[in-house]
Length: 245
Image (cartoon, rainbow, N blue to C red; front, side):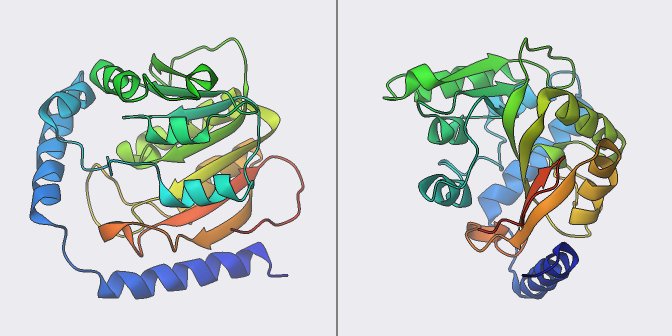
């Protein structure tokens, strides 16, 4: 069985190789990203809601995340109370929810939460999920979570906010809970959002709270221009056997 450091190195080599072969972002998505950056960098108070109002949402792929669906189908994810911060349209929230997993999707954008509720209004598993307009960094739920899924959330804010993100994860997650991170975009570009990320940057802020990676894999199911720019990492605060996709 490979040691975590070997998995880490292997994943990074794969990502680096694929990054060398990637093409440029499609024109529509590039325009959405430019608009999003303009709004977020110039109007920070309600920028994310304005992004949703104006359709400047390049992170929204229009469906549940493929690798998440794979993990759900294979029964490889924890049950219990689950949190999806920055849930947006809520596709992943609905996909995760079942009788054994109650999922809470939170987003700071009222428009995003309204959209998520409208899209999921007739979902057969509606009693197993909920959407809340909340600020992840100040929200105070009455119960902790067994599982947290983070995708296109960590990369939405700059490095100065990352220690606060890790602190909130540690506060919201039960001591034996699991954090699943889809690390994106793995690159060395300047500025953002999305800001460049790496496994090392996650480790830097998670290790002080006792989190260790139990699995690090390149995401072979990444879509479109995200191929070669994503790594799936699973984290726990207790000793555990390695798990794989």
